[in-house]
Amino acid sequence: MNLCIIPARGGSKRIPKKNIKDFNGKPLIAYSIETAKKSKLFSKIVVSTDNEEIAKISENFGAEILIRPKELADDYTGSTEVFEHAINELNKTNEFEYACMIYPTAPLLRVEYLKKGLDELKKSDACYSFAATSYDFPILRGFEIINNKAKMIFPEFMSYRSQDLKEVYHDAGAFYWKRLSCSKTFHFNDAIPIIMPRYLVVDIDTEEDFIMAKKLYKINKNEFERWNELKQKLNKKNRYIDLKERKIFLVAVGKNIGVESYGKGDFFVRPVLVYKKLGRDYFLGIPLTSKEKKGEYYYKLIFKNKTNYALINQVKIFDIRRNKYRAGRLSNDTFHQLRKRIITILTPIRENDP
Image (cartoon, rainbow, N blue to C red; front, side, top):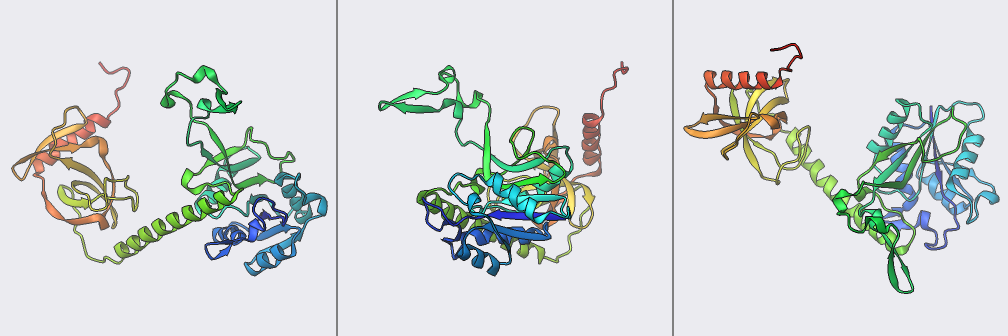
């Protein structure tokens, strides 16, 4: 069983009543509660607070309440102390195996990352996993301002190109999973970072942060709803597609819908050869191009009296719902020769082979 703790005190100074401030139509804390509920990972979701208004609103959205002592509700108490207090209060009978602290200021958090945090922790010997993201600019190129003049913090990296500097990550301030059999408190060292994209991370400490978070939420929500609508439309397509080896279809390879990689635009299509059918909805396909290619990973062939190249290095699984219409079929001989090329490429060279 898993326990969820959402720490939310009432004494926010920079943004008064931040945790229950209206955020696109709902109190900010409601998003964290709803994400926890939607994940179906927790048998108990508890808001730790010192504030009656926060408690009432949290209860209305389905959370239980733990009133924390005043000494854990001042400006100097860290969230780790609040987390440990809640665990000690709510797990006296050791009924929970894992606990997760979700910040009340994480409206962009998605269930998939919350689940991944638990999955990765279970597979490891670590005590903690936590949400993290990358810095959007190399911190080794950072500087401070002294007497109105810039001074590099790491001057030895002044001449480095940004792409030559190592990527550095930071805490995303979203969630922290703990294995309750561990007695130590949270520390970054040896904890498992769950990397979230930067567009899902915002640290809400100022009014400017709050405005930015609302804008990011709307952008992500609109994008999600647009592509979810597209998926639903595609799922309604019940037309029968006769998938057989050697057939070539014009396939829409725009934005990602299923298992394929990203394409080049919403309406971009290209011919794809059916190499192997993989059940009712998917097939292993080889994209074709009329642009000249050279090398062992490209196979030259004639299709409809025109020279094409099979992009063997781009073999991937395609969703048949992307198929627009059939463009033709390769001859048996050409398909056989292509298959021989693929087998040759994929066959490993043994050390004892001459």
